[in-house]
Amino acid sequence: MIQKAAELIRSAQNLTAFTGAGISVESGIPPFRGENGLWNRYDPQFLDIQYFQYHSGQSWPIIKEIFYDHFGDAHPNGAHEVLAAWEQSGLLKSIITQNIDNLHQRAGSKEVYEFHGNSRNLVCMECGKNFAVEEVSLEELPVQCTNCGGLVKPSFIFFGEGIPPLAYKQSVHALEQADVLLVIGTTGEVVPAGQLPYIAKEHGAAVIEINTEPSVFTKRITDVFLQGKASDVLRQLATELDKINTH
Ligand code: NAD
Image 1 (cartoon, rainbow, N blue to C red):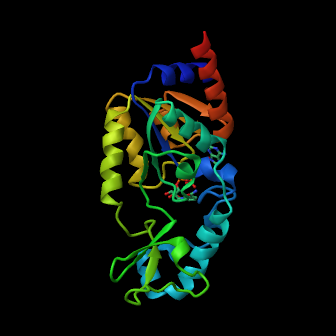
Image 2: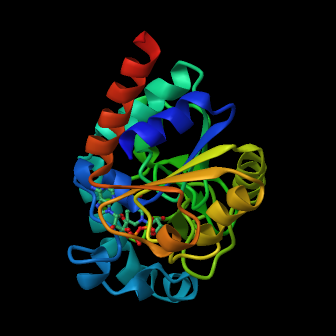
Image 3: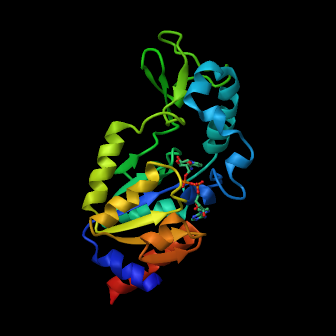
């Protein structure tokens, strides 16, 4: 299976990756679902946009704990690094990620479309002013805008919010162009993100899936399923590609 996937990757003209929370698990960031998922510990309503607007004093401390205290200590792992190296060598065209942890960029990836936004930036819900997280104090919550005093929220999307239009457009375009799609560490249960791999498939792409467990995609559209941890599997693929290239 590794060999078959490596052959597909090697002959790809337009290799694209679609990633989810699973790729960052080995960096110490838990996924939302599953055994150690965040939703077993926290109530998802804290990330509902309407709840946040009216109860930001309750939502913000939870948001800080999950996305800034925990995420802040995380570093890119081998999986992020392999993808960044493949982009640098011209093999990988882009990454569409559901993740908001910035780890692809920190590993060196440049062409990253953040379908759900990013936790490293914040935005004022009143005047629209943008902040880098380093510019604001998370000691006094809820965070208030230094410009107008309005409520500030992280720039990732909450339940009830739309997908950032530019990221949506770039993602769909990339998937229409892809001839091989890597689907890594996602259950595919979050919509509309979970619909994205089908766009690539409908446009003729071969789908290689990497996950510790089968997902909704596995039986429907996956051509090669590589079961295992993202960093192990991607490292094996990188080694296999090196072997093919030196022959
Ligand atoms: P999910 O939480 O629904 O599922 C995680 C998937 O990763 C599962 O299919 C699981 O089997 C797989 N997985 C777990 N460990 C793995 C590993 N080491 N290697 C490979 N696969 C592994 O994740 P989702 O489908 O991405 O959807 C969740 C939503 O949560 C996304 O919208 C995302 O924005 C958000 N989220 C993001 C982060 C992050 O930024 N790191 C973390 C949690 C949730």
